[in-house]
Amino acid sequence: MMIMLLPFPLLALDINFMVQIVPDLLRATWITIQISVLAVLFGIVAGVTLGGLRVIGHPILKTLIQWFVNYVRGVPPLLHIAFIYFALPSFNITLNEFWTGVVALTVIATGYEVEIVRAALESLDRGQREAALSIGMDERTALFNILLPQAAKRMIPALTNELANVVKTSSLLSVIAVNELTQIGNALIFQHFVFAEVLIEVSILYLILIGVLTWISSHFENHVFDFGTLARSRQSVR
Image 1: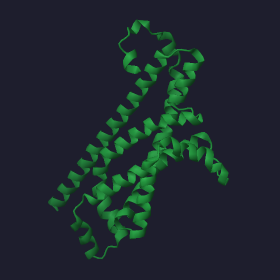
Image 2: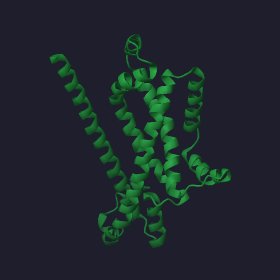
Image 3: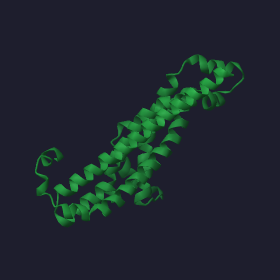
Image 4: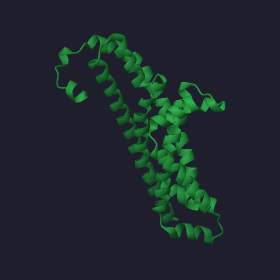
């Protein structure tokens, strides 16, 4: 739809209206950022924990985690959101719209971040884990002190993609009336019956948001690499 709209002359757009709705859309963008960042951070904690257990855990635990991953990745995101918002109250668990969005996106992000962590850990040389165990480290210490620090840099590009996916998936939260960017965009459309201006502005905000997140991730990845290089150079001097 956007592709059809863009070729039209910009002079046909109501620029005054576009300026007028900027504050509403920026407030909605801030809510989108809050939900997405919280979901990814919680997802990283859960993903590192479950991903680590997928590598060093008991076979039964590994199987249960794999079932969870298959469930999350096999069910449409909208159903996860609907279940948490509409079904959990049947079990006397009630969340408001904001935290429903955070929990739903955390579950979705965790399903993918578990595999990101697992793949990064399994890409490391097996000899490092064996060497850590041979000098008396237990599995947990080897995981957090030896393996995860090395795997962290390899996770960053995939985690960036996952953060971008979470931001885009957050648009589905409009179905439960979370005041994120897509929801407010829809509200403005139906309130003023203006389509092109709102859709263009919402799209631009999503593009800017994803672009900024990608830049931050790239900057962080380069610093991680620099810190690793500095550490190795110090070790070589010693």
